[in-house]
Length: 514
Image (tube, rainbow, N blue to C red; front, side, top):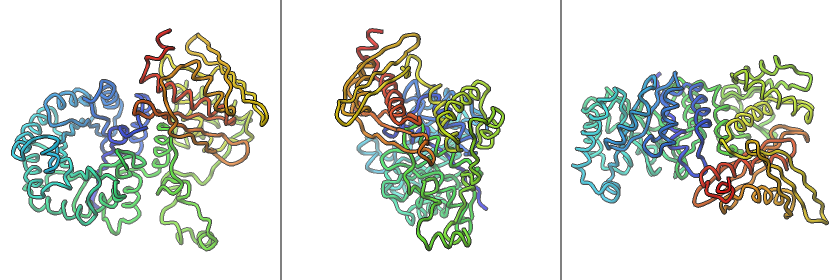
């Protein structure tokens, strides 16, 4: 079978979409998930876009050992210099440079003539090549470009040293038949096209990103650019889990395989959703809660007789364990550590001790602790550890509420050695608690885009997960809290989001006083 490389851009294209921003520690956590998945290339960011992006690309390049690490760069000297500085310490550094090639983009965005774009491509690919051998060239908005001109610019890129040529469907405009034809056309009309990898990068504006990427493979593409959970600009990118499992399930059609360890898919998906404060839609292919559930009587009968009647893949193939063993308050640290290792978590001694302490606290509130509880606990513990320096933490809270009195909440927060208290009234305990937090933190004006409560596992004593998203000055700030007490989970989620808000807009009254 043909080997297809997986180029994951969760940390670049995915992370730059609204509400999906991550701090450095969170990016490292995602990069480690991608390394366990065995993706071929991690696009760690757009190094020149900000000092923070440069730092994250550089740190990931120095951390990851099993994948190539790439940085995006415009076809400009300074961009390429910065990209190289960020990725040069990687095991296999890649510079990924791009320039627009559609008539619309060349005229209105670049304000360049086609001949100038060809010349710039030749010059910049050659310039990038003097840094490293692994060079990817992308023709932005390729699917709305003139095919003959696209063939010329691809030829120029290859002649000057590109080893991968990417054909992006930048605005999700094309269809599967068109994408297959375009890759076949370029393969046939570009000299030495067999010496490079052809890549496809498809957006999901019309819901065809996965189909278009697979059509590209049928046309001769040998690399797919995608993201975990399909994150990305507007409607998102090709979903990594979908294209990988499609090729794995329908090998008879695509005659292609990847090196992805599919048993790591579910964990990677959940990690990313947790970090950005979201959960998978119920009907999300592969990783949604309903993906392997059957309610129809006919379906249930068939599955009980033979799972293959209604399941074309198994939950275990993506890392969902069927033997959901539970732990309890009598379980020791060894059993706890063993179970985490079976779930794929390799924690340091310090992390293990911290998680074990939280596990014991949870056991006092909950009779049995499931795998889902453990995964949520580890993710929450990592998030607490990754809180911004100087950020606020919950010290304690007390609420009073009834259906005939106004709710009252007293909140105590700590920041370093300092403690702050506030008492507020509100329309219910959550509203009163949020007002008390605002009275202490004094964040910039903001609104709520989302507030969601989910249960982690079954039973009335389950852990509750609260996710919320705050909007301020055109940006979105996610927060997540976890507790068997839904009011506490809500408070923790709000503090998490408010800390992120204050990191970005620090000129609040509180920070001026500090």
